[in-house]
Image 1 (cartoon, rainbow, N blue to C red):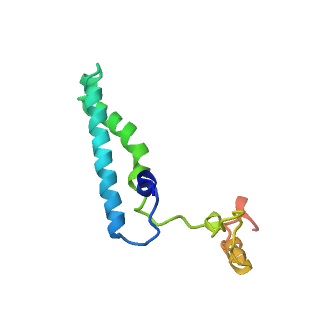
Image 2 (cartoon, rainbow, N blue to C red):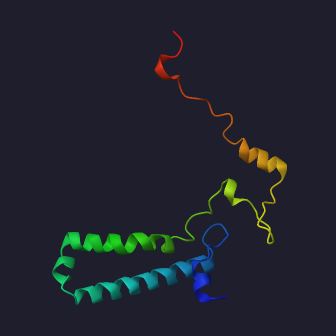
Image 3 (tube, rainbow, N blue to C red):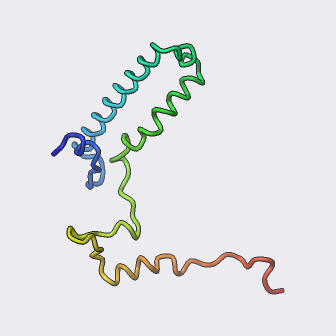
Length: 123
């Protein structure tokens, strides 16, 4: 398997397994290396005095860390549940949920009580 694909594919096992922790360590080391490299390269530019201020560091962190958060947190949370997360077959990509499961998903919020009437309702 491709190393990059292995690194960014979520692990389906719940909890922190040995491979999940290994992936997390590799991601953190790669991210720290890239962040240090970018920071040192920007220090060679005329932006150095601005990067040494608190607000310059904040802007740098926001620009670098926010997009990388998804990369770092791939295995930290369970996969999303919902109607679009059904089991799919390999051929047509059609859902293989049973009719009972489909009905359950469709009627999931059917019993939720409505809010109070608008404009005062009946008096």
